[in-house]
Length: 89
Image (cartoon, rainbow, N blue to C red; front, side, top):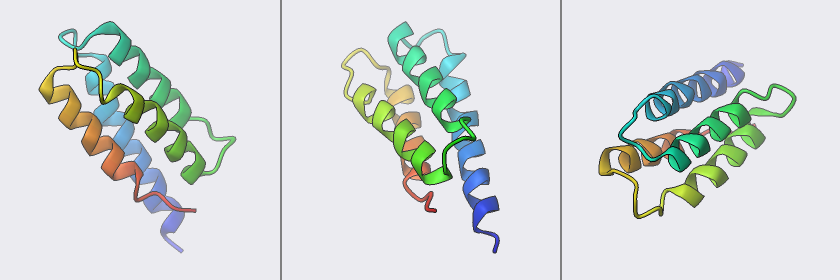
């Protein structure tokens, strides 16, 4: 029965990590914009947690290959994707 809480806790953790990327001015603007889009997707309560996570993963995987991304941001994005991959309905 604690599954919905676990999913929401994982999503909240992912949002916190993404927020750090958004607020990091050393990260290129397009990557920060994608992180903002991912946060927006994660906070869309009209969708199930798994769908929100999948949408965010799609956005993050697209930008994770950006050659201009600083290494620390890439690692953070990989961490977020790892967290979100565990979100199930």
